Image 1 (cartoon, rainbow, N blue to C red):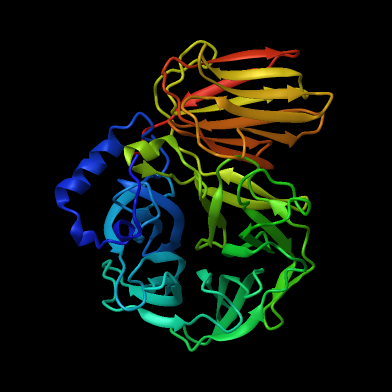
Image 2 (cartoon, one colour; image 1 turned 120 degrees about the vertical axis):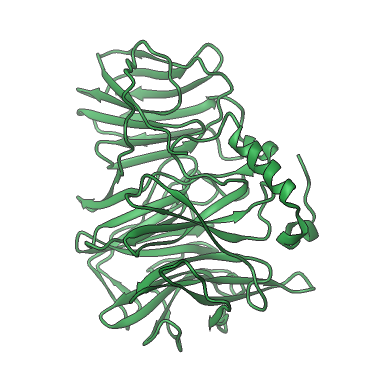
Length: 476
């Protein structure tokens, strides 16, 4: 696997030949881990979802991308669009680095429909000769013919008292005013979310202050996103370095959320916030982006990988995928995540007897919490779900589920379940799985990399389980 120098990471796209890019794209398309219905890069690295919006009668979504290798290099946005959040079309639309504000990468951000245009707000990254960084929040306009403005619009410079770790703006329009939430780090190495206000999207933007989160939440906060869900506020973000005694989590960095009755914009304070909670209790979920649709419905999509982790596809020069789009609701003080349904195939499928093809949705109905194991796999590879009724737990184990992921954070995740009836709905793809429990009350997402294709379902439980399933249509 190639070791990249800093110079190679930030080389201009023009320094690569069309033949090199075509070779990388063919390698990704031909991979045994090429996904069937999850968004993935055509080549290179995919990370954060960006610019998620409903515009011009379609859904628009970008992902951050370095097209030339599985490395965090010179980033751009690669746009797709969809009529239904399921069938995605690659657009010839790229937000690429340009001088003077994003010469070393277009970093994460958001989008907001304004009249007949889409306003993009994102972080421009510039590296200085001494290895430092200049982070500027910039903007651009996209018209209905998918034409971008020729020049970035500088919006917000790094404020005093904060480091250059100042990024990932979300722009919102509420009660006649524009607001921006931006992830930040203080000079004393504390994570923060900065709140800005403006009368126009192009500014001038005024700092209201750091959002009052009530407690220390690590050394950096990334990807703050606020959505209105069933009349309440949901703030989803990634607090790096969060103390695990505050909220237990197993990954290198967590994706968390706070629910509140509302937000006092002028005081930069959530109203009656609930305790901090995990957005996903699995292995590989980060940088979730949310959007409120044309009918005030709320949707979320996440990056199904994590920073600083080595995945098997790195050896094929590509990495990363996005989650399914999930509609958000509230129930008993928690977010409920319901995936947008992928169309099923007309092919007959008996999950108890037929081989798995890694393009299925499987449903397991349990009348009570059992003891024992449900295993997907064969004699050499297994993805297992281990129930312990006396402990009221479910452990998801991917240790033997194919080629190893190089991580210091383990290959098992254990979640708490009550002793009653449960339904598990498992969305299985060629190199990802998403498990939704009890209608989306808990979600466990992860990557896995099987190398054999004769996987089947086996059960060893102390009670009977009803298993149903359907093959899914191939989207990509």
